[in-house]
Length: 148
Image 1: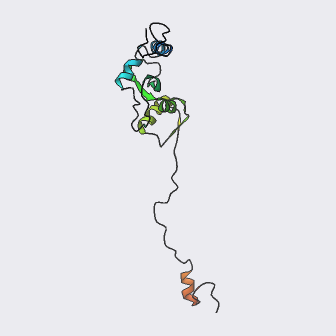
Image 2: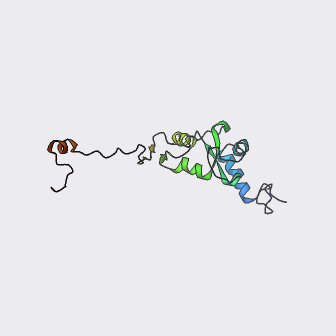
Image 3: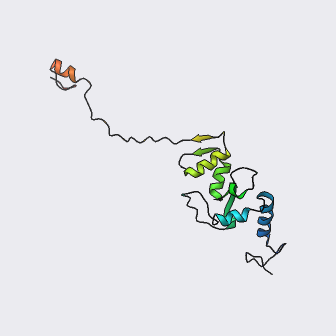
């Protein structure tokens, strides 16, 4: 007898230890809808631009957009990295994808956003202009610092 995931060691209910834990957590925390949400989202992170390549039940998390609401329409699949950013960070960063920032704001309505400042000059510098041009012309001395 094997677990549906292929593991030969079965713990209870015909499931291995990992699948049994996931099933128990699914019933306790997701109202039995975790697998449904994972299938709907293709076992992939739904954040556009996320570069996480891992797939599967163990490498993704189901995120409650409304804490405590187990309606599948209010849950979304996130990779573990994106889920940690949404649920465990204190400041949102402006280099995150827009959807990730939306999810963070939903979880932290009183939170602060951290904006990076760009110190790169985008306009060319003005050419050097002598400060005392009128003084030199009026006195006829030419360059400053030149000896007569």
